[in-house]
Length: 96
Image 1 (spheres, rainbow, N blue to C red):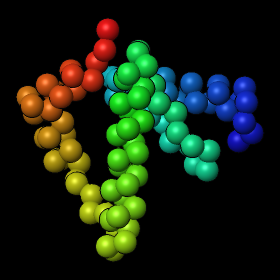
Image 2: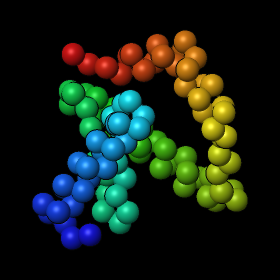
Image 3: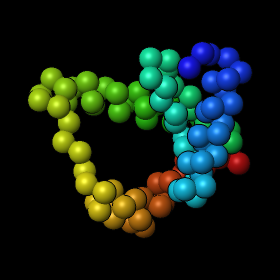
């Protein structure tokens, strides 16, 4: 897709669709061959999302050297995401 207005409108449409399906906004949007968009209600939230994305990229690059990453299945993703300690960590990332 060409950059500019058309791409921006497409990203907005997809972000709204994601929110409608999941009930929350994505913190990062990865664009194939075009970089990353980080979102947040405060600049510190955006900086935290970018720092986590950078750490994730570092870990994935290391895993690629060791035969690739081993992903967690959907059941465990949801189980971990709903734990009380994970909810506490999520609240720490919210800035006024």
